[in-house]
Image 1 (tube, rainbow, N blue to C red):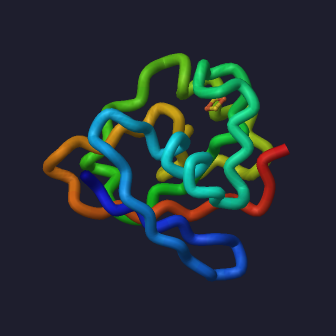
Image 2: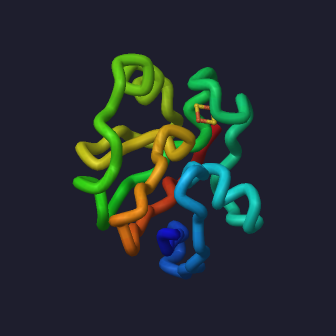
Length: 106
Ligand code: FES
């Protein structure tokens, strides 16, 4: 289990636990985190689950080509630590990650 800190654009934070086989997006939706829209439900069709990974980026799976392409469609500017949260599955060795939610997803 991994602790995920969701940081909102206003600086407020909420920490939730995610099971090993769940994505960061699923943890956000399941815990009512504002700012993660996830219109496509995790099938790499929307880019409305964009996050900036502030801590733990090295613990995440490498970015696949489809995610890389879809990030170009994100509503907020892309940064070196941009990822699509539906593709982020923290593994058991990752105790804590911090993600910044962008100003807008649509
Ligand atoms: S939920 Fe649509 S790309 Fe992640």
